[in-house]
Length: 580
Image 1 (spheres, rainbow, N blue to C red):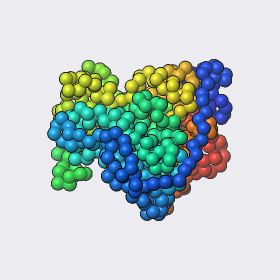
Image 2 (image 1 turned 135 degrees about the horizontal axis):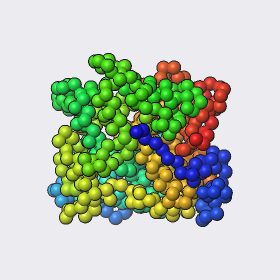
Image 3 (image 1 turned 45 degrees about the vertical axis):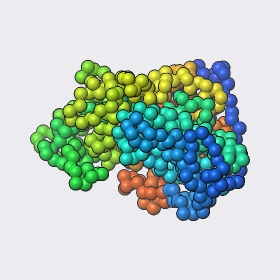
Image 4 (image 1 turned 60 degrees about the vertical axis):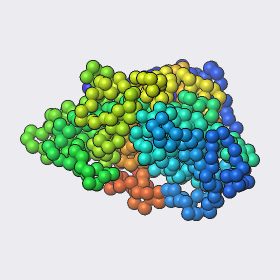
């Protein structure tokens, strides 16, 4: 049975209201008679008053500044855009000796613009952290610029451990807690104090954002530190990261059973090591066949055959793998799937269950990006080289995990288990409190904070379906009034955070700022493809028959980008956002 997307009446009505650009509405589509939503004042900027002197003059509990140096304008060019002059500060918080005898600290860097816009951006990083990435305010989704280029003061951190400790840091209780939520809690007040020391005043508006694990960090911050940030930019939120990793581990041996016996590929991080070629279970040609079938069945549902399946929910009912993809009558040739392949792909898309029948994670939608390299990377490679780290980080007690002999039932229980060393379960530490009933976000809404969410519909590790389910729960928890506080923008065809046959280049931060500080709710995000000549990097999976800069408006769920009936298929203004 195909995945479906039930849409609550209140959510649909809220979508109609937001498309009209009107004020917030209640469940009956009349002006919201509930508690009014505050409008936050706009930030005002300041000039940097000190840089190098911060090392000797800044004081904050358990914080050591290692360096502070001026960076001239020009050399730093994220996404092809030169960053203005700024101060680069590097430091550590809470250095300690771990229970495993290793040295730990929350490493960070901050970049403080000479001409500051009065705002703070916490760059939540992806993966399992462990690296202090440059604090450029990377936004995911092939962005046009980063937060630093827009004038924000930006912090980036390793979340309390280093790469050499990955993934075994999860066996050290405090390191796991730092990764889960405590590093953000420690860094936030320190960063605001450092900004005040550098500019003579603290940030008037604070934002946090990231993609993947960075999206998880952001949702966790909304649930735990709702008084610290005014805007939350949530990309591809892996908010149920332990469950998603376990779903990958669950599928790996099943892919292997259909793979070419003894076939192997090079380990991407250790070229002399070979790992099973799980991709031979569903080859690139076979995935392209599935993708074409999805497009053939679903593309027209949004009014145009343009290679973009915008009507995602309708597609889940329209597309049937058994019917729409030819079944091989003899040997596989790339143009068909065997019965066994169809059964397995259907199970994987449905999300998988433990032997006891417990759903492990979430269903995944049928979308054109199943043909993409990133889809295969997550399903066939990362399930062997990244997700096995789940045993150390997401299970209690921590353990080594081999996906090909894992007791999935035991692994699922371990996500929710506690023991003498880990008094909080991995689920409690890693996922947002209240994720099943996020009524705790009502206080953010009432004080004027805002949340903007984006997610690739073809994401192969964290599912668009899971994000939809979260948004539905949020809407119910807020009495059908979530659209004036939180909006979700799916990106059809986009893979994990970027890539795929998609218009994956967009700036979601500036619209979030306008929403928070000017009350201008985003009725859509302006997006474009990254074809040949794109200054921010070319997406090799942009179809050849698209204009290299094809434009689209990304519509707030559950509305659908729909063709007006005339105009270029490469022009955003040929489409409008319509309620389903």
